[in-house]
Image (cartoon, rainbow, N blue to C red; front, side, top):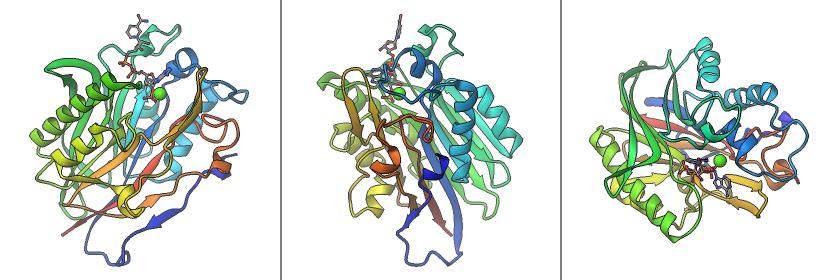
Length: 302
Ligand code: NDP
Ligand code: CA
């Protein structure tokens, strides 16, 4: 049931009560494209009704809004118009960037390509600029994208940068190398947009476990660290996705929130336990995607 959604946070700050800077909450979530869920992913043992879009779209919204985020970064969005209509009505503004050759469009009855989306709370931020990039591998465009936005906190006037991406999926040495090249391109792009000289949050589905080269590449080139690792004693959470496909069970950490030293992380959202995830794994009627939403509270010192 929805009550099983984890709502606790771990607090890593010693002075969480002081109010000397701009604060905002960022959530990132691969929401599982409806077309991929129905026609591509080959999930096994889903509870009846899990992929019924009329209901699942409301569970996606519920799960986002439960955490009351100021910035919402989403991947595998193949229903941007629905989310944008709903979220605009309650005070968010959003931008979308579709993948050039989304696998969604090859699924019957698809709703168009999937891509990344970024929403921000309109009464909290002014949008200074937003852009997107098709990520390159060895100077050739790939099928993955990145969104970069510069926002101004209305409260304090501070500028903050938020970027989100969804790197190439699948396992194997060549794919790990391709992700690493995409990571270099993300770093170059984010830096070229000004993300290295301002508070930066870079988050998304990197499709890479913590030991993959791309994770170190992103950290080193952008001088960022992981929000979760920082508050979890150097460790990433044990999983951010947990699913049973035709071939195997997948339980690993591939989603991240990175931040640079111009901002602090005050708390991170706890992930559901194995018991909360449940025996059929994800997605299910309690958790709308095979990925788990992760979120953190960011503070930008004045
Ligand atoms: P990716 O390899 O990045 O993966 C696309 C999606 O598939 C991701 O969202 C990923 O989810 C999911 N995925 C990951 N592992 C598996 C798995 N084992 N089984 C099923 N789905 C998985 O795709 P690209 O954007 O690079 O596009 C390539 C894909 O698009 C091809 O694999 C093909 O299926 C499809 N395509 C089909 C065409 C056609 O003519 N039929 C033409 C062009 C593309 P997550 O990130 O959550 O892991
Ligand atoms: Ca997926």
